[in-house]
Image 1 (cartoon, rainbow, N blue to C red):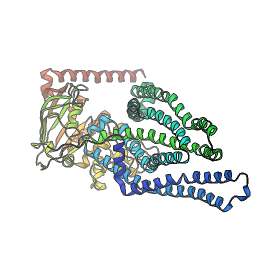
Image 2: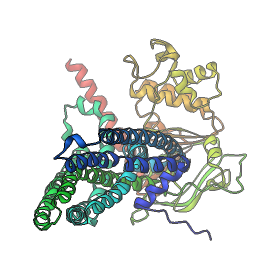
Image 3: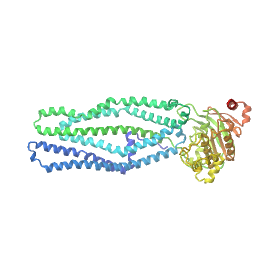
Length: 605
C-alpha cells in the first residue's frame, strides 16, 4: 500500500516553495548576501575618516587628504555596490517569484478541477478567491521582495556582531546585551504558541468574512428590494462581528511588547553609554577609546534598521505561512479517483442502489440513507419531497459532484466510478436552480453547452428553450454581452438560457433541478413543450418543488429525510394518500389561495 508523504509545514514548507525556481533563487540569495555585506562598507569608511581626523586633531594640516578622499569614495562605492547588488538580487527574485506564482496557480486550479465539484459548494467562492488571489499572491510578494530581506536579516546580524566585537570587545559586549534583550522581546512576540494560534484564527475568520461578503454582494438586490440593512444578512453580520472581536484584542495584545521592542532597538546606545563612561574612566589610552566610542555611537543607529527588518520579515512570514496552510488544506483534499480501465456505456438507465451519503463524515446525520430507485432511459423520473429531504443531493451525486459514502450509482449498468469524469460529464446535461452566466455574448453563453455547435444550432436550441424572442430584442441580439451597458436578464430568462445550453449539448442524461423555478405559467408551459423534444429517448431526472411540473412524469420518487418513502405515477400516489398526497393537497391549496387573492385585487381595483 502506498504511503502518503507527509507535507512539510511552517517555514520548511515556505522554503520548499521558494525552491521551485531554485536556479533563480540561488543567485538572488548570493547577490543579497553580498549586498548585505556591502551595506556596512560606508560605516567602516566613515569611521576611518573620523578616526583619522581625531588622531590628527592637533595637527589637521598633516592629514593625508588623498587618504580621506579614498575613504570617501569607499563609502560612496559601498552605497553604490549595495544598491547594484540588491537590485540584481531583486531581478532574480522577481523571476523566481513570477515562475513560482504561475506554477502554484496552475497547480491549484488544476487540483480544484480534479476534486469533487461539490467541495466548491461547501468551501464557498469567497475562501477559494482569497486563497487564489491573496494567499498565493502573498507567496509571490514574499519571494520577490521579502526573500532578499530574509537573507539580509540573517547575514546582517552576523556581520554586525563581528564588527561590534572586533572594534572594541568591551563596548561590543555592551551592545550585545541590548541586542540580546531586543531579540528576547521579539521572540516573545512572534515565537510563542499563542501568537501562532491567534494568526490561524485570524486567517480563518478573514476567510469566513470573505465568503459571507461574496454571498451578500450576490444577494444585494434582494436585500435592497426589501429595504434591509447589513444586519438582515445574518451570516455577514456575524462574521464581521467575530472578526472585530478577534482582531481588536489581538492588536492590543501587541501594544506593550511592541513598544518595548521599538524602544530597545532605537536606544541600544543606552546600554553602551554607561559602559563607555565606566571604561573610559579607567582606560590608559583615552584617545583610542574615544575613537572607538565614537564609532559605536555612529554605528549603533544602523542596528535599529536591521532589527526592524527582521521583525517585519518574521511578521509577514507568519502571515504567509498561515496562508500556505490554508492552500495546503485544499491541496490535501483527495481528487476524484479515476479508473485504471475506464468503461463506456451503450444505454442510459440510471440506478441508485442503497446509496448512503453524508456531507461531513464526522457527523452522524446523513443526507441520504439507503436511497434506491431506477430511472429508465426514455422516461422522466421526478424527485419530489420537502425542503432538505435530499432531492438536490441526489442531483449532485449523478455527475459525481460527490462520491457516495456507501452503495453505488450505475449508468447503463456501469458504476459511475468506473467511468472517467470527463466521459461522465459528456453524458449528462444539467440545469440547476442557480444559474451562472459569463460576461460574454449570449451566443457564447449558450455555446458553452457544446463548443462545436454552429450559430444555427445555438439559435435552434434557443428557440426550443423559448429564448429566441427576448434575445432578438436585446441591443445586439445574440452578440449582446451580458452584464454590460445595463444589459441584465431576469431570473426566468437566465434559466431559459441554461436550458438552451442543455439542449445544444444534447446529452443522453438530463438533470433538471428546479429548471422552471422562475418561469411564469405561460413560459412554463412553453418550456415543458420544449422539454418533450429534448427528453426524447433520454434519461431525465427532474427535481421540483412545483408539483404541477411533475404530474406527467413516468415515475415520481418521493424523498423525505434522505429516504424514499413512495414512488409511482401521479394518480397512483394520489390514490395511495401518503406523503405525496399531503404535499399535493398543500400545493393545490396554496395555488388556489394565490389565485383567489389575485382575483380579489383585480375586483377591488
